[in-house]
Amino acid sequence: MTRLIHLIYSSAAKTDFSANDLLALLASSRSKNTAHNISGMLLHIEGSFLQVIEGQEADIDQLFETISADPRHGNITTIIRESIARRVFADWSMGFADVKLAEIDAADGFNAFLQDCGSVMALPPGRAQKLLTAFKDGRWRSRQPRSARADTQVATAAPSVDPLQGTDIAFQPIISASSRSIWSQEALAWDTRMQRELTALDHDAEPLSEIEALARERAMLLSAEPGSIQNININVRPTSPQDAVATMRAIIDLSKKQDVQDRQITLELNQDYLNGDVNSIIAIVQDCKENQLNICLDHFGAGRSGLNQIEMSQPNSIALNAKLVRDIDTNGAKQAIIRGLMQTCDDLGIDVIAKHVETTGEYAWLASEGIDLFQGGLFGNPQLGSMPTTIRIP
Ligand SMILES: Cc1cc2nc3c(=O)[nH]c(=O)nc-3n(C[C@H](O)[C@H](O)[C@H](O)COP(=O)(O)O)c2cc1C
Image (cartoon, rainbow, N blue to C red; front, side):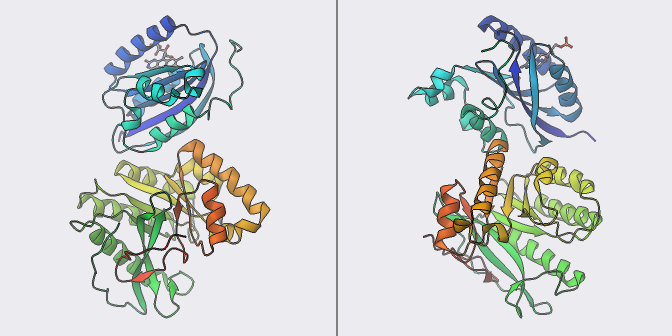
């Protein structure tokens, strides 16, 4: 089966590309891309290239092989290669912008950049757009050796689900600090006796997966109610690769029954209980993206959820694990780790969610490092049966 993918890479010119050279490159690229139904965008900033190419997987891989072998540039670095639901540059066989550093640095350079790029910033928000912005801001350029040329809010109350062996469904808001509003609601399988999220440790796997399936369905129904369109985060805590595939397939099927255009559904993948090869779930992760479902690596930094997972799964977001967040404002080692992680995620267009934030000190430090999405008791506790509508933001 062939998939729609996009591939984003950076490279450094090895020869001096004059304006005419660039135009000639564009003209030939456009005609070849049109023939293969490939669309995309090429940015050139004083010897550094960033290109997005999108199309059928086989066509993109073949073109990238050709481009990689092109002696006119080197240091070719693949930044993203992943499935996409739809093209971002559908109208452009190859959009193009040639930007001078001076223009970017000038006061009105940003505007000039926007004009040069056509409507890049009017693109739907996504990783391609974030990457282009990061490139403009110096990422992927400054890192490369010099080239050879040298130089909310949902208000509907919902009936509580019948408790299933001391379980219920709870919703906890994830807030956006910049917009000071609810960004998404996370659906939680809730242990009413322990007053906390259900874990596989205190419940058999069967009721756990049953209540989680109920939580997903309830969340998707509530989030799509007319007049109360709401982003949701739903948990996927597979015990085996087969379980992961079945659960994610069920969510894809569920989402197909609903119009998910106006809201973002994020699958929080928690691999704490996963026995088996993580690699074998990469294909279903790609299927999710193809179907407009975002992937978040949950408990990031704990257990299996580490740096290599960012490279393998290419998530839309990561959620920091609780231990990393706890007392971050006073712990230098944790601060250094988060700073590095933020840089990595910025460079890759990945959002960072800080969960389990309990104190204003933790919040202030994380916000000052550029984190925008938060969850925790500081902002709002889980609420049984319905989506909370009020939040606190310090
Ligand atoms: C930075 C850069 C970007 C390129 N982008 C494309 C492109 O989008 N499409 C394309 O057909 N060729 C592109 N090329 C040119 C290819 O590398 C190659 O020269 C061209 O496809 C002709 O290959 P062929 O002679 O094997 O058909 C690019 C080259 C460079 C240096």
